[in-house]
Amino acid sequence: MKYRLPFPRPRRDDGTLPPALAAAVLAAMLLLQLVVPRAVTLPEPGVVRPFALEPARLTALAPDAAILARPLFAARVAAGPAVVEGPVGGARAIGVVVRGGARNGFVQAPDGTVVSLAPGASYRGWRLVGVRATVLLFRRGGETATLPVTAGASPTQPLPAPPVAGR
Image: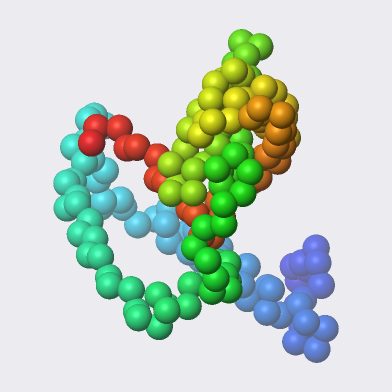
């Protein structure tokens, strides 16, 4: 009696031959894996000491002169007077901090120094009379000056770098 497969024989013309060959190869590899004795032994479980890595060596590269001559994010400022005296001695309002219900205003002097002022404090003869979220109000005699709080530093008057701890 002739043995018949429960599925049709794979043929090249209908595209069933390559998957059948791949299945036969995988079956042969499985049989080989089960028959061949295991010669590889794994290490015993336990604490494994990691290998030591050398610290990375970083070298500073000198920036190219062409890059420094034309910075990407610097604002272009037309040549003119270095600092124009404005209200409140040329200072700019750069921020407001609210802490415990008390508000303090921060102004940046034309030389770049930052001064914290509480309401009632004086700066170059101007008294801070009001601190709001977007403006600082100053008064000197009968004059009143309103300084809007600006975000970021002016390209001609950069903010100083914050102090670094431990230096």
